[in-house]
Length: 231
Ligand SMILES: *Cc1c(COP(=O)(O)O)cnc(C)c1O
Image (cartoon, rainbow, N blue to C red; front, side, top):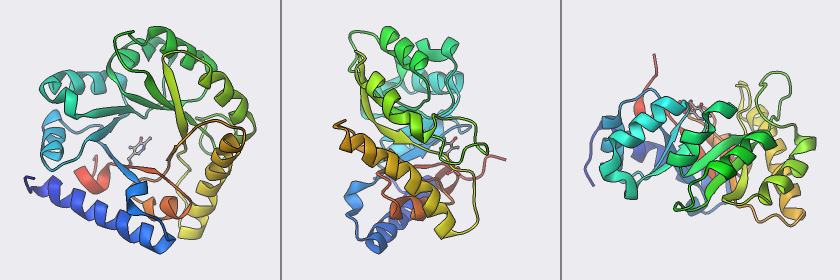
């Protein structure tokens, strides 16, 4: 482990995760940390990797692919997650370079990823993005349509459905944050109740990871608290 500024920040975020899990009566090992490196250079990812971080999230396909290629020497030790909105004309590079996609909100995108995932790679790990505060945040499938989409995506080859992601609009207090996250958790439970083998609830960012963990998040996506502000 090499301790650096990014290394210190990673430790602080891990400590927040442990505190939040303790408060929620959860095992800290049940929450993974995804470091969101969008807008930060490949060198920042290298520094985080040296401090022990493995999973990284990118929003923009072109920027993400450039970073993945620039860090090809570390590829086997990194896990790359595409967390930004996906247009159908951008699915091919995502299928070829990323390990995970969190932002599937329609069948067409999933079908293209399934078709384009290279046969020599392991299945692409995918989450559906659910829109828990309709109107405010336009991306994502509505809660009522999520189960049907989940069934259709789970049936596609070359993809493995892992769960749900949500990005609620920022709200001021803990209870309001938790209430929105709980809507995603309820849809996740509905999927499990329907027999889908999902294990990932991708909820929580720098400002609201505690509320997300209180609502059952298994993966928090943290940018600012690790890499600093994006200006
Ligand atoms: C930017 C981003 C994050 C990280 O947000 P921070 O507030 O910087 O922690 C997480 N998830 C998604 C989808 C993002 O776009």
